[in-house]
Image (cartoon, rainbow, N blue to C red; front, side, top):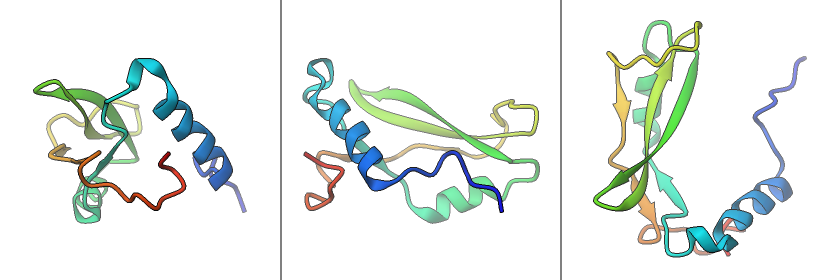
Length: 101
């Protein structure tokens, strides 16, 4: 059985997210973006989609993300489904999450 190098434990996730949230240059910025699972499932179900790439983006000055499928040659599938319209945090946050300060 192979292990997925993208899977991390909670302690590492907390360290990474708190480092971002504590960084002076990111104070007041969005700390997370939520997109529903059905949208990700549609993106992943595209023929040839083997990866996902997330771009940081600005929507009227507010940090957000744009998500695109990626093919086996590591090319963005820009003719396919692109995701945004995220629900940003702060505003919609899980305030009890250990990933939040």
